[in-house]
Each structure stands twice: as C-alpha cells, then as structure tokens.
Length: 311
Image 1: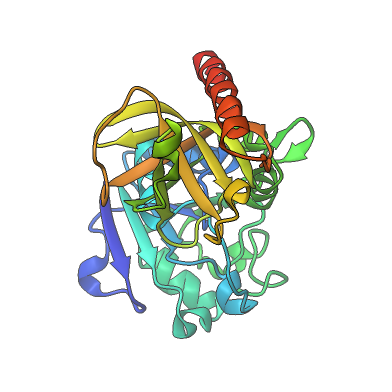
Image 2: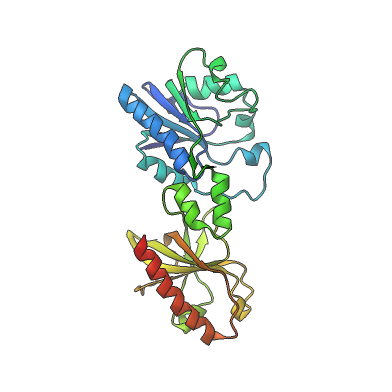
C-alpha cells in the first residue's frame, strides 16, 4: 500500500494516474463499521478494475472545528495505516487538517479531493460530512459531483441494536468494558509506545514490569488490572497489565501502565512495543503492604492465563 501525506493543496505529482474508487472517512480505530465501508470500496475497485484509494486526515476534524482539547484517539496514524492495509487498500492519503483546508467550501472539497483524485465511485458511511453537515453530507453530494462519479452510501452498522461507533468504543474502554470494545472493533484493542524506566518495585516483588509510555494521544483503558498480550520485536507474549496510581506504596507517579510479561527476561528499555488489552480483571486495590499485593498478583496471573487461553 502506498501512503501519501498531503499538506493542502494537493500537488500534481500526488495525484493518481488511473481512475479510482475513493473511500472517505476519518476512520478512528478502523472498527467494524469502518471496515464495512472500506471493504465495500475495495471490493468495488476490484470488480471494476480500478485503484482503491482511501482519504483520511492526520487529526480529528473536531479538534479544528470544535476546538476540542486533549482529544484522544483509538488509533495513531501508523496504526490506522496498518489496519487499512490489512483490508486491501491500494493507496492511503493522509491530509493535514489545517485551517486553510478546513475552510474549503463543499464544492471546492469535492473538486479538489474527489474529482482530482479521479474518483469514478465515492464510498463513505451514511454520516460522512465534508463541511457543515446540513449542506455537505452524503444526501447532498450529488449536487456537487458534476456527474463525475457514482455515490455509494454504506448504512449504519449495529451490534445488539447499538450503533458501532468510535465514541461508544471509547466509552467501553474508559469504563472497564474492553471486551465490549473489542467486539465492536472486530479485533483486540491495542496501544503502542516505548518501554521506559520505572521505579522497578515489581522486580523486588518477583513480578518485574515493563513500563509503557504511549505514543501520541491514545485512549488508555480505565484504572485496573487486565489480561494482555505484548509484542516485543516480532513476537507476542502473554502478560498482565496494571493501569493505576501505585496506591499501595503511595508513590506519586501519576497513572502508569505496567506490564508483567510471562516467561520473559530481557532488557527491553527503549524498545517500541504494542500492547493488546484482552480482558478486564479487577479494579485497583490498596493493600496494607507487599505480602497482600504479591498474593493478589499470583491470582491475577492465574486469571490472566485462563483468559488468554480462551482467546
């Protein structure tokens, strides 16, 4: 898959040289609803012998239009690209969502980012917008298309009568329901980051931990202990992870992500890793001392192994 990063406006050399099926959306998390849109576009491209092109943005439009601060994402740009590539997209465009780009009128956006990308079909979800939602939505797109492309609108996707959406998934992750989040995502949610030095208290307890510093503004699961898997290099290892404040020892560390990797003993400081969140086990508990904590960690490991074997 070819990845093109665009700082508005599109340059001539960035334009495709053949006709395309253009797939539109922000696709944060590339959940099952997004996957339906993307697969629809990819299958259409293959059927008509066209190139499948996905256009998305480097940040949420909400951070520009609504000026949302501390916006959290289900996927970094690298992770989004990885998920999109698995679905068979030929070319991915990341457009920098700056002020100038945000001020494009609907017709300007369609001309520059649909027609110029040689779209013969434009595929997007039912709620996709490209400006003010009352005038720039999928229902009005035909007014701007200049009859240059066909419009394919993918309807709302649901699970258990609930809309599959990034907002719902974020809420699941933030409220101890990571398994529900995984169900809506269609894969196991993960964070990416770098292993950094911690206080190394886990080592003294017999449960050494790798401390994860996440990359970018990623959604982090709620406080608690989880059955997890961690990728170090090309290998996945079973593990258990605590998201918490180290309340037993009253250490003023802020929220940390500490992973005990099973059957693993290597120095991985500075390494980039991915951490999959399989099952929420329990909340954070303050113990009277190390002994009570160690007993709980033994139980957490047993429960983690049981959960991971079911996956």
